[in-house]
Each structure stands twice: as C-alpha cells, then as structure tokens.
Length: 42
Image (cartoon, rainbow, N blue to C red; front, side, top):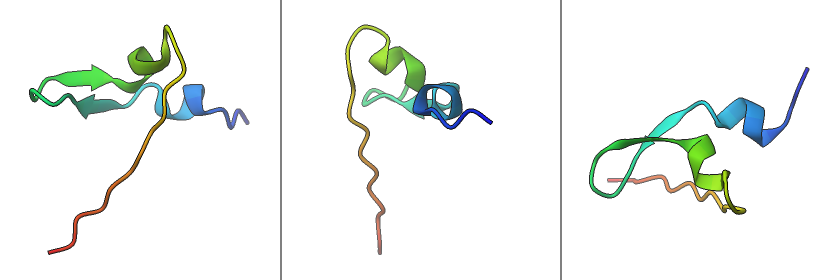
C-alpha cells in the first residue's frame, strides 16, 4: 500500500481562487507546496 501524499491526494481536484478546478498534483509539480485545511463553523 502506497501512503505517499502524491499518490493519495494528487488526483483530487480543488477550486482555485477564481473558481476553476485545479488538480492538486499540479500545485507541487514544479516546487514544494504546503497544504492547509480550514474548517468553517457557523
């Protein structure tokens, strides 16, 4: 079982600030990236 971040999260799509889908793996293709998760209450 491969537990690497690239394999497990890289195929997911997220929305860019302008609302377009972006594949997570493209964010760290050329350089390291930091992922932050924010949960909104309210």
